[in-house]
Structure formats: C-alpha cells, structure tokens
Figure 1: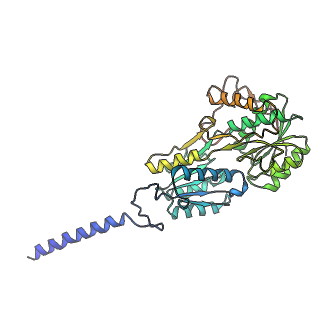
Figure 2: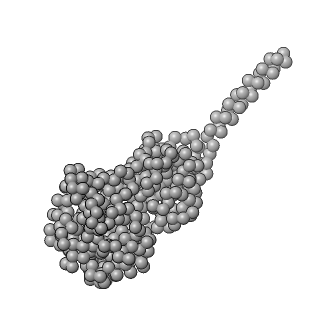
Figure 3: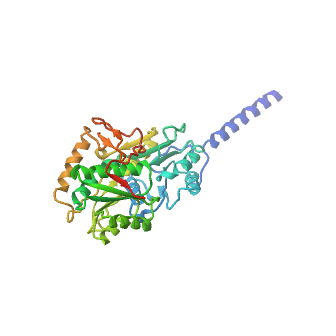
Length: 379
C-alpha cells in the first residue's frame, strides 16, 4: 500500500513539474507578450536609433520617411515602433540599443556609421533579436548570425545629380561640403564629380570637410569658403540644409542630399540625391515576420528604386538637364555600365580603375576611397 501511495505521489509530482516547465518557457515581458508567442504584424516591435532627428531635413529626416512608409505598407501601428533620436556615436548609443532590446523589440535598426561597435556589443547578448546597421561593414566578418549591414548604391544617384551641377556651372568650379573623410563620403563626391564631368569635361571640384555628420554652422561656413574660392555650384554630403541656404544667400546654385531642398532654397537648389530606406526596412521586417534569414550584406541601387534624385527645379536647371539625366539613368539601369568604369586616375595620377574594368562594391558599405583626378581637397 505504501509503495502504491509513493508511486502515485511521484507521478503527481512529475505532472506538476512538467506543467511548471511548460509555463516557464512562456515568460511574460514588459510589453505583456509571452516569449513563446509567434511574431506577427499585431505584436512585432521595431526599434530605431538615430544620430539626429527629423528636423535636420537631411539624413534622419529621410530615414524616418522610410520608417513611416514601412509602417503604412505593412499595416503596422505607430506604437509598434520605438525611435531613439539624437543619440551620439558614443556609449550612449549602446545604452539606447540595450533599452530597445529590453523593451521587447524583435528587430532593431541603428542608422549611423559610428553605432556599429555598440550594436555588436548588445547583439551578442540578445541572439533572439535581429540587429540591422546602416552604412557599416562588420557584419560580414562577424560570427553573430543576428547582425546585418545595409546600404545602397547611392553613388548612382550622386552621378545623376552631378549632371545637373555640371550643366549649370559657369565658372567650371564645383564645391562640395563633405562630412567625414570616409569611403562612404569620398565615393559619393567622386560619383558626383564624374556625373558633372560627363557633360562638362572642363569642370573641376574642391572638397572641404566639416568632420561632423550634422553641424549646420560649420556646413554654412564651409559652403561660404568654397563660394569665396569661385565655386558656383555647391554639392554636399552632410545632414542639414545649411549649404543650400548659404548657396542661395550668395547667389550660386546647390545640389542636396537626403531630401528635396527646393523648399529651403528655391532659387538655388537644383535637385538632391535621395534614398527610399523603406525598401530595406520592409524587407528585413518581413523576414522577421516570416521566420526567414536576413542577408548579412544588403545593397541595391537605381534599378530597385532604393536610391534616386528628387524632382528637378525646372525653373533654374540648365536646358537639357532632364534629357541628359534620363540618358545616364537608362545606361546605369541597363546593367551594362556603372559609374566607376575605367580608366580612372586619382588626383596623384595613379590609375585606380583600368580601362574596360568597372569597380563594384564587394559589400554594402562603400570601400572606394580614391580622390579622383580633377578633385582637390582643401584643408
């Protein structure tokens, strides 16, 4: 009798333990969602870390437009997205990314170059969360399966926008306000210059760095310095509209980046190189929803409408600009030709791309960092 009673108690305890074990696999987080629940459009949470905020009317503004478009296209609710704006490229970025992870985000996007190391630190602790970093390059060599890099062939859009500059200049001197001496920026102004040179072989370009992604005061100062050196069209790879308004104030012209800057400078801004970040945001979010792998390195261009130029300011662009841009677009989108096709030399006279060859990026983050012949970097 005692043996039967002991056996019965043992069986009951086993059932109780099994029940407890089953519950423990579905612990409830701060968002009220059980960890064992499937991710769906109704419960997915998405986090973003941005270096600035949409008021910059530049990079973060453009990236946030992509977020809003993704929300609409996927039928999500605004409160399923958590934005961390104005986060510097410092340990504060790691704190912000970690807070998003602890808030129950299933996928986190970090959108500035200097966030990458901090993202890697956090990603190693949360293998169940997907981490996507714009403009970086370390995912490919990382052993973290939940880390991904994304960018786009923005140099193609830069080339098109350069055509507008090359046709508009009278002095044959272009100026370029550049943020940082990184490959992302250098390949961009190279492409801009090549576009200008394709329609104006006499054109030259001067580049000055601000050494900051977003510093409107410095951007205005650099733009003015270039204008004082005789540049009558100013291009930019920096976050604010300061180069555009400075160009207008000084009676010269401008080509922008990230947003249509005609509203900011209607008498100066010709067009801008722009992104549609929603293409990647939708792709990566859908991958999480469908339980699919996200590419380690993702980059697409004009043909896939990831990059483009904004509307031309038809009141001030040179005659024939629209036609020349259309010709170049067709050539790039055909896949038979691309921007960095040789022969190309750097500004020291060294051949960097041979005749008949085309340089194509091996990964999402740009690596082409040759300052090309015809471009002078002004200290």
